[in-house]
Image 1 (cartoon, helix red, strand yellow):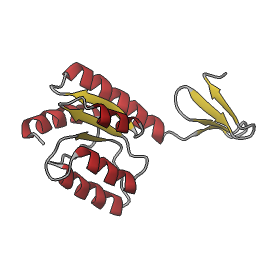
Image 2 (cartoon, rainbow, N blue to C red; image 1 turned 45 degrees about the vertical axis):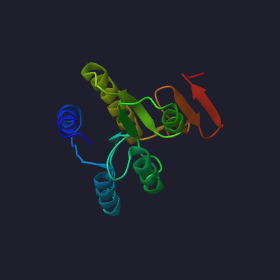
Image 3 (cartoon, rainbow, N blue to C red; image 1 turned 120 degrees about the vertical axis):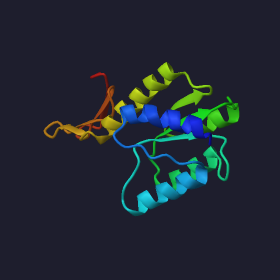
Length: 153
């Protein structure tokens, strides 16, 4: 919701991600996401403030999740509201920045989020013979034996 913060964040995002689209508030973001969804395109990551004009971040997240239940989010906020944090735990929130932004921490979290996005896009089946599905860096599931492995255990 702050133009300078949007421009600064967009600059850093463009150094990590291939395509960045910026919205000025929650209503603008929902409109962009709805058009994208209608065109069968999705965003890998949504970064949002919680306190924005027109539609706040929590309302926006709720609306996005109705369309795209597995959407990933990073939250930026000047506040550490416990109630909001508890609600966000159940969502696909990859990170939570508290303003003012620390660039080093922000870049580290964005790199982590990019790795998670890339993992999501990898083919899940590692070995068709053993029916192993890679869930993330730590977990694999064997569809044949119905066993879940944590670091090969």
